[in-house]
Image 1: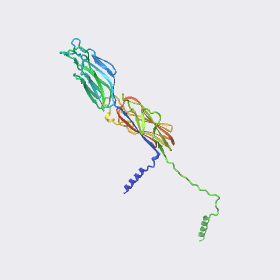
Image 2: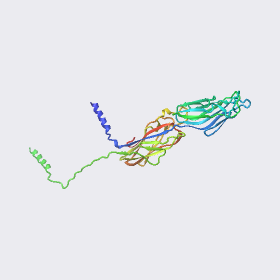
Image 3: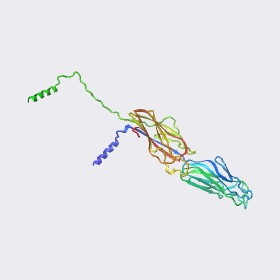
Image 4: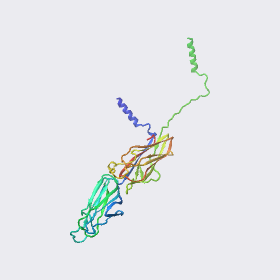
Length: 187
Length: 195
């Protein structure tokens, strides 16, 4: 019974605070949203062998210096290492996408060319803090390689492109592919 | 017996004052206590706001970070409260989180080896009252998304004051990208007892 009386007294005291007006407070909520952002910036070359690099805007160009051996017409090995400044402020995916599935002729001959190659495959490796993915072309247009990154990341995305030497003479002509590097925010 | 009679006569003299005074006075003390009272009205914005709006009790940062490169945008807004305190009092500012904290911080921590990100957004709240300024400062964090907890700033005012209490909330810009997410904090403004 004594305990019950004490409890009642506390309730009364809380309901009628004698000090209520000697202070005044206001609470404000502060808030803001940071959007999902993935960005790739300037591209730079760190090293290369039998290849050069020209900076463009959203599109840059790697040119193989000696694409085919002048005596055998076989593809020569080439490689280049590029750095692309990037940032993604949430979990994201890195994707490498080959438009043609390898280096192919801009203007292929109409007929068959037995004994000659018309395509030169290559590998592209994208290295990024916490992730790496490799694309190896094999003729399939739109070939892609992806890797998920489970958090924000920033820094230089290291892109290594390597063309192995070939053993089959190439059909003469200009060879080309478009390799797209993407950082895609995961929703 | 003779002594007893003498005492009775003395008592009779006191009961009937044969010598009335020409005037009379009586002091009456009047007491009253004015309680210690402080009031704060609901705030409104004053001056021009940069990258922020205010409605009800919420300051909303319009674009906390750039949609292009996630860099932290500069923000400033000033809230004005009509205030009164009738005694020597304190003015206080209190941040519940110690900065603007990302609601999804744990799920969005930068990967190991990554470059730097702002994971918690700092701001300043500067109160102007009774001719003096007081600043509550919280800092950006590039190492942790975790709320450091309550941060307070209190200062005393020597007497009563009535007027406008202006509180400027400001975020400094930074080129460092900010982790994506919804950030928030509760800022308490008070006059009277220290927060």
